Image 1 (cartoon, rainbow, N blue to C red):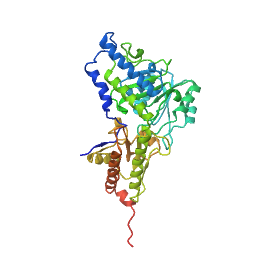
Image 2 (tube, one colour; image 1 turned 90 degrees about the horizontal axis):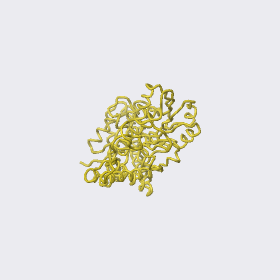
Image 3 (cartoon, rainbow, N blue to C red; image 1 turned 90 degrees about the vertical axis):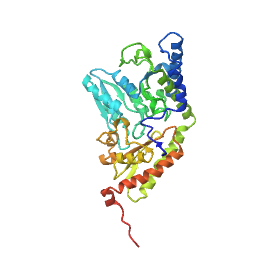
Length: 396
């Protein structure tokens, strides 16, 4: 059976070039990067080369990169490393749970959190951010691009507001890194999180950009690794893989790969919506339309179906998609992102996320266009509500 994977916002396959770069550091180059002998120094050099590659991707100094185990740890380090009792934190209602649950935990430390709403497109209003500021506001943490809809927040406006108010600004860029150009100086952020497995590096490695001069309380205590910001022996193979993936992403953006991906994504969503709507029943559209999105992501609702039923039906035919965040799979409640945007619970449950990766081709998109509308129609035929709304053919 042919299998096509269009769930790259959940995780991506490790690219062959990345795997080739990592392989020597599992065997002949095995040294501890903190050791002063030859074996340690050759792995230390590899870690620092990777740090430079990640810094180039983000437009910062290599000394401002802290390697972590992934996006969740990077988010936690940013949030818990800056705040203490009596502080006030501002975030949004559409954040990844790595941020939302961290902010929820802050209440137990005597820290109050304000959750900003989004409009029907999924965007935070900068004026709402200004109004939420208080004298004791310490940190604003709002994501760069949403993991479910791909919607891009106006982070540069947020950065200016934070600078004017002298407040720290952290942005979770896990779903933005490699997909769109990122320059931390243009954003004006103090901290920015990325995760390797979202752009073809291995799982278990990520990074946090920390602007020079920003003092963080570490989450982990031990050695003086990462300039005493993240203790623990470095995951050298993973870091090398992250560096190689960052290098490939930088080159890809320079060559316009993001525009090619956007063209594939646009063809996918236009064709699917056109075929589904031609069935004669309105009830399919984009979530987060008419607003900037990362080029690889589209989120579509199909009324009169259950999203998980469609995911299962498509998987049986060889197409892998998702209903939203992978870490929320199995959740009974509809997506917190889509309901925050104002979608009805039934429509949120009927929403499907398509996310492309570097490995996907035009043939993969054609495969999805062939399968999705037909599967939606078959599931709709089982819905009494759909059949009630379906136009009745009138004989001449």
